Amino acid sequence: MDSVMVRKTKRSVSMLATGLVCLALAVTSTAQPMDPMQALELLRQKKEFEEQELKRLSSMQKIPAGEFLMGRNGVNKNEAPVHRVYVDAFFIDVYEVTQLQYMEVMRDNPSYFNECPLCPVEKVTHFQAVSYCSKLKKRLPTEAEWEKAARGGTEGTYYWGKDLIDFYAWYGNNSGGRTQPVGQRKPNAFGLYDMTGNVWEWVSDWYERDYYKTRPARNPQGPQTGTLKGVRGGGWGHPPELQAHAYRDYKEPDTRYINVGFRCAKDAKR
Image: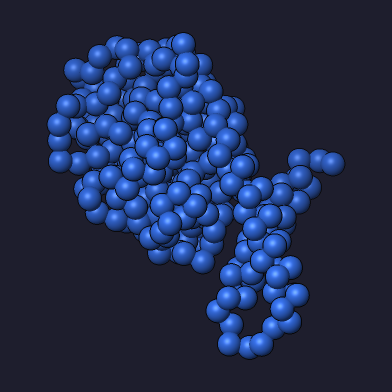
């Protein structure tokens, strides 16, 4: 089966599965009578599907220790200078945290686009993202870890080189004005999905515009204090320029945004 057919098949299965969840959820809320055995079967299928998806979505990828070139010159001042950074090995989620996963752990779904269990959770504050990761014995990635993971060993503006952005990211021109189910676009060389587009992702660092000028060369953690937290990766409503791996943005950590979500990381055992 060629790669185009594989992608179409994966998307069809995901859409079918999402529809199954929505249909099963409707069983408990519909005013119309339903055959009890049919209702039980739908609920059984929903439970089985959710268990399978939670297992799949929990996968993490190990990012090897080593140096990479972080930042970008000549575009935005807060991205300069390009500098070499050493980062210890770590694990990072293959997918952005979905509404299904968040609901499973936090028993809540704050998302604006809350009818899509396989879409990334959004409208979570930085502190809620930290709490979710902590409950799973994980953490948010640092800004340096995030950029190293996003680049996938590349040094260009985008990890896909000269290919079209539409193959790799949900952004302003193709998202339909909303989030989309995770994992539907091509992954980067590390096998990570949606590192650009869909939702911005919280990182652990406090934001400082000139931090790159004074940062340590090994495992930078960001400033010790601040008022804003970093977000990376671009979102469903933004142009390609804001999807660049070096692009740095920031948000108020206690505010919820319909285009900001997260993924978790954790230390690799030495």
